Structure formats: structure tokens, C-alpha cells
Length: 185
Image 1: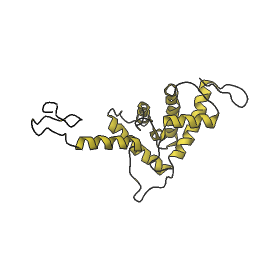
Image 2: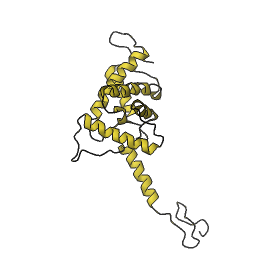
Image 3: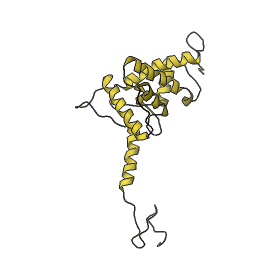
Image 4: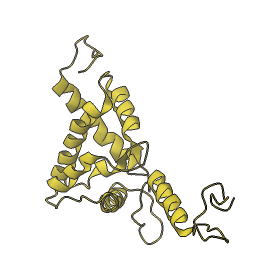
């Protein structure tokens, strides 16, 4: 899996690469946790840990990042730290990935199937990370929050849902996006 060589011109095994990446991921995520409401994307984390270790791979991100983050989950649990992997979100929607179920499993909690409930759980875990790793919190200790990208999507959906549909004044049929009734013209 690794494609780059170490300083001694040896190519690390996949296991050695995952171990090195997991150690760096822990350090990167600890740094992220020092910023209140900060998150990092899977892609950003992958780039950072490859840069820091000098071990690169051409394998697709989803084929290796899960095993690295699984190690971080178990190490955080072993140390008694909050689940740092709650800080890692997808680029497209700002949500934690499917691997977040490992956080719950390691903590002995039941799985959370509902996506919004999983995001709320992750928001609480992120707040625990910010508190534990020394982020500067607002008065009152801060609040759990969805990632900025996911919160923006939730707000957009809420605004759309709150806006009543336009209805034709003549035939009382919901108007299409054009605002011109198909039946009445």
C-alpha cells in the first residue's frame, strides 16, 4: 500500500504505515481539538499525516483511512480521552463517516442508525474533545454543534421547509418553480 520510501530507502509495510499514520493522526486531531468548533475533513487529515510521516500511498482514501482512524478510536479509549475521530468529517456534507459506529462500539454504547442523531452524538463528542484538549471556550463552557458545513445544510433545508408553497390564485394548484400556473398560464 505505501508508495514512498523512508529515510533509509526502505518501503514500510502496510501495517507499519498504518501505525505511523495513526500516531500522527492522533497528534493532528489533538491539535484540531484545541480550536473550539474546529473540524478537519478526511482528505485534509490524510494529506497531513502523509506529509508528516513521509509515507505516501496512491490507494484510494476510503480504502485505508478507516483502519487508521480505528486505531485512533481505540487509543483514545485506552488513554481515557474523548473520541478524537468525531472531529473528522466528510468534505461534501460535513458529517462523520460510517466508521463513527466504532466510536460507539468501543465505548460500549448502542449503535445510532439515524444520521441526525449520530451527528448530535458526534457534536457532543467534539465538545468533550475541545474541553479535554484545552480549546478556548466561550463563557458557560460552550455547546455541542454540528460541523459548519452540515449546519449550513440543515439551515437551508429548514428555510425551504418553512417557506410555504405558492398556490395559483385561480385554480389553487401548487405553482411550479417558474411561478406560472401550468393549468391557467
